[in-house]
Length: 370
Ligand SMILES: Cc1ncc(COP(=O)(O)O)c(C=O)c1O
Image (cartoon, rainbow, N blue to C red):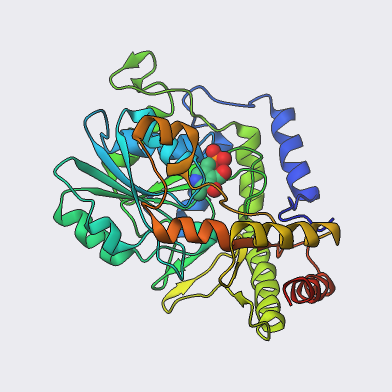
């Protein structure tokens, strides 16, 4: 089976982890052990932001970022529904209410016009997601958010190394959150990072990741244990050095896939709008005019040929039981989101996919959609 994503771990990661294990410092109670500090410095430099704060997961990064922006009960946070549930769950965990916006039909990212219609006096933040690794069109979102005194948090769990108008993801929004889960473009197994140019947000996230302590055993705000271990940070630092080569391979595969699928009239292929650079976390195609049943049959046929072709995201968040029941979510309130959920599926382009695999995948996709 050609998997949708695979970890790329080499002897360098193994050696780095072994060194940490032998050093005796496997984690640090402030979250600022030597390996974490080294990884944070490297990440700051890579994305071009003033601060990077390592945490235990992408979900922890989102929750900590929202808490740092003082999001809480009575507040509203505008989020896309076409995303992984963690984006909206993090909002719920603060006690605030997620308000679901629709997506742009070409990029699948949150649509600024949809956001505009949802802004109220209660809007405290806009949480925009770089879905599939494509950076969301941030400038207009930042503009309307700041006009309304709202914070822009970018969920960049899928977009390490992507670019928006010449800047690497992580230096553009007020706060950016990354995930290093095993399937991501770079990994620490589980892990996350918050980046920002704002000193106050950075120091708040540092406190939040260690129980809200201003100094040891002195709690001045709500926090949790969201620390990254030294083992994870050592692995992350090595992965960060390898990230450019991982991204290059993903790009090569994505370009090959597009070239080979471009003759199919049945598919809408992913694009990179002007001014953006995709991280190619997922290569997601859309079956023109299809319903979910037809799309699912194609996915099954590809699977029987040994090609993983999963659907992200078959059930948008506003239609998940938790949200449907708690927020009275009903069908057809987000037409572009619900349509995309019926028509998309993703194809493997990760660094371990060889050029001949791309040809095999493209050939079979053309056959089963013909
Ligand atoms: C868009 C998005 N947001 C948030 C997360 C949560 O990250 P994690 O799994 O590291 O908690 C993920 C990934 O899993 C994601 O894809």
